Image 1 (cartoon, rainbow, N blue to C red):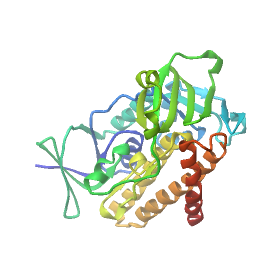
Image 2 (image 1 turned 180 degrees about the vertical axis):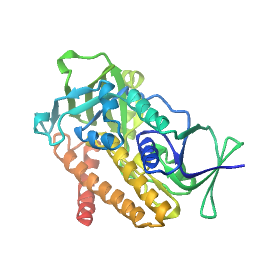
Image 3 (image 1 turned 90 degrees about the vertical axis):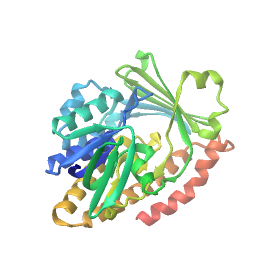
Length: 345
């Protein structure tokens, strides 16, 4: 006997939580499938002030503030030239530096509060189209039926890969991360500094200071062993998986568009696009109107192309290390990104 739902969301990160919560808010019955989550190795993360908009839409702004994020009033950078950017000049206000584990726990609580079923699984035995919907089998015994499927499994892209869809990878960026003791001298400042084979990032978070070094995976092997031993490595590359909304499924968050942390928009777009995706799915299931699904596909593609163009421009500000493979790769990407941006506009 199968459990039946209108939508099955794979993954419970920001994108999955936003999609599921929004579906519940518009009256669509959803279930969330989650593999046992890993604790975040970096301990914290920085969000632009614009994060308030999707959190407010989901009714989570007060909960976010109650979690005690660190306000970020300035960004100090040594990138091409040294400078300080004050949040008073930002249209979105100050940045927020958060405990990422607490942030994800609050998103999960929002899903639970809406009465959405969350099922943890270890093995996906079957994911197949069944008439106008999907047949899903988990761990050898659980069967779930759904009219629509959402892939919110991050860079792993579990659903997409299972269906034979592979992401388009744009670089090999990885991050070496660590949580270190808080430095009171930089209590409200985010630091970014370029280096010969990558760049450094540091920001205050509730439990200390997040420190990260970004470089390409093939260049990472050249780093000093003490650095490799003391920091954890995580993927941070840009990648895009073309949405397949009319095929009964779509990707959201990193499963759709994974961002270089330099842009600072990954979680914001995961939440915002999760809301957009949920609204499109709801219209399709209720009225058979697939136009919003098509709009979602175009929106994701155009947004990512514009992101690549902006990212290339930002990397191009740094010219001191033009002979380095890391920076040569990003300068060569600039022309390609500009062509994509022209197609968007």
